[in-house]
Length: 87
Ligand code: FES
Image 1 (cartoon, helix red, strand yellow):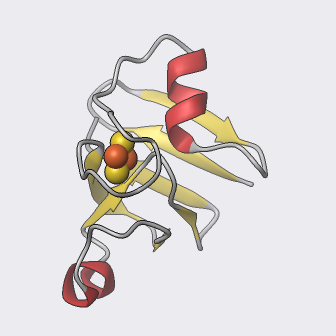
Image 2 (cartoon, rainbow, N blue to C red; image 1 turned 180 degrees about the vertical axis):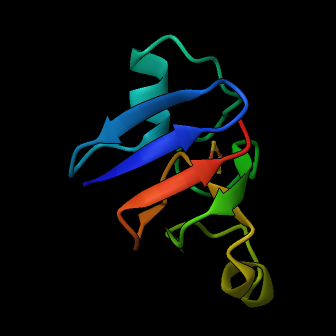
């Protein structure tokens, strides 16, 4: 479980274990682009401003993963207690 701060919207949400960031955002009425929800299409790619994502997608290259600058919010989580996203 971790927290996610949407920097542009100024909203913060708690993401419980077993739920995706995408699910939490949708449940709270935040509209985000998505398609596959399985980490393969890349539609939900989101810029990470702070924090370290726990990448679970099949889209990013090893280099993009290591940079921790983008993530797929439909399937990936966090290794830090908080992620700040450019949403
Ligand atoms: Fe397809 Fe996230 S919606 S990778």
